[in-house]
Length: 143
Image (tube, rainbow, N blue to C red; front, side, top):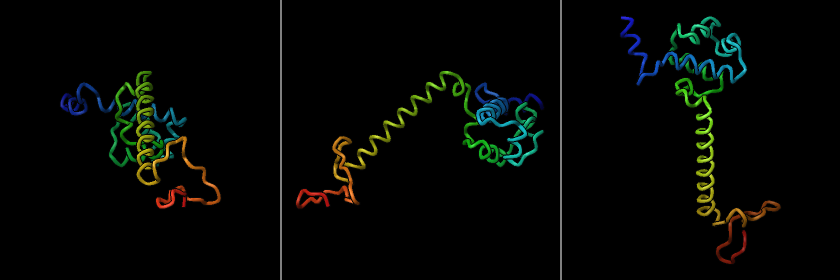
């Protein structure tokens, strides 16, 4: 029975319980919380937090939600692989943020072109006293 349990907790060679335990500890440490403080914030017993971090206890979806809320984290973060916490993970995260920023700039530019009238960032009108940035198509003046 113990061998079957071990197989269920391992996906693609990764021990899910160990992964969750390590990430919980990492997120708690990053938040500068002790096990007791986290237990208080999540409305859980301090011994339970210790048992989770040491791989002795498993968690329900409700407990994952409580822990995520207490740590200001997303539930998926408990299941991230090793690379997110090492130097390569930081590099990948930085690349992701840069890509996200580029995507947001492109989306904003498309929005401006479609709804405001095609201003470039350098040509963006300076608004004074509640002026509208919308151009008057009949006269070429701002409304």
